[in-house]
Length: 126
Figure (cartoon, rainbow, N blue to C red):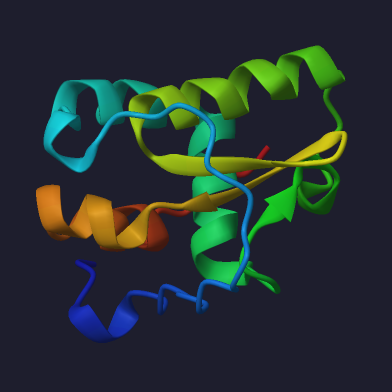
């Protein structure tokens, strides 16, 4: 059965609050490369992180703990860094924690339809 436009879950885009910390280093919109973005999304855990941010965000950005992932902190740090360096997410430092959100407008501008595909992806059952 093929997916149609009405089968795709709605991507949540929350307004950006005022007085945010500066983002951590990331590629500019014009530097986003499809092969790099797809490489970052090729890992099922990273794809799950992005999908959860797109569909379940409760705030503008989220700390690692919000995801409820049972992984060592060093592993999660690696995955969040890979997403940021690829340009998929934006991270900001809030004291001792980093919070992330998907760069929806930037990715939509460079790769229209990509985030809808991520939102429509269904994780493989264990």
